[in-house]
Image (cartoon, rainbow, N blue to C red; front, side):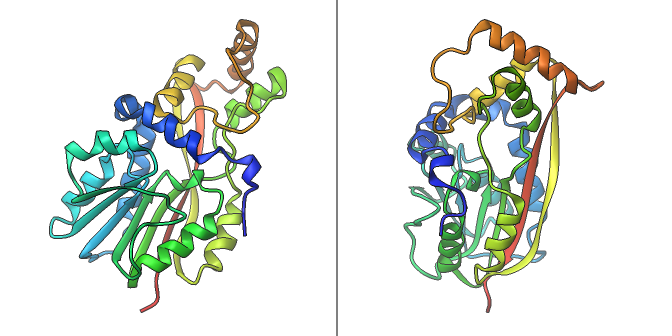
Length: 266
């Protein structure tokens, strides 16, 4: 089952290349990622003491290091599809092993992890049912899957502004929250909590937002995206259209974050 049309999501090879290129600049502009990941950490069950944890989509390894500090007696595995991210993360430590791999086909044995943690990575996976199936497979009985992802409504201001300019899709597509609900309910894992929470960042001007997305490697990767340079007139049109959303704090960029805590039956 594919919960998002494969044609509508970015090619994961493009995602890997884009995030690999962004490795060196990622942490300097990753305010959202840090805020979301720390919020996800705070939602882990009280008293959790894993022997082994897995950070899926570890990126620069920021949360692998947080997990390593939080669970100092545990063995840590950090996994990412982007070789450039792993090359950046490995010397900084936090995990004992850094592994190139895909969340939809984990290169791990059954019943081998107590915690699977993933913050803002799974939105790139077209087959979220496969992600859940793999998490259930590698988790030990009683193990916990904790994830944060993005759903429809993310960067709606940017999407609507571009739509007003040229009708093109310049913003990455994400699945509906209802799809997360349906797939988690049918995963065989026990859903302990699953809900959305908006995170809003503010920018002085549009160019700061688009620069940050590029620095993160999260700029438009949709198939069928407009190729080449975005013309000056269209950029000016975007700036004008986005101004309708301006708030006292600046131009808002809303991220609709899905937080999920699931548990494998004992």
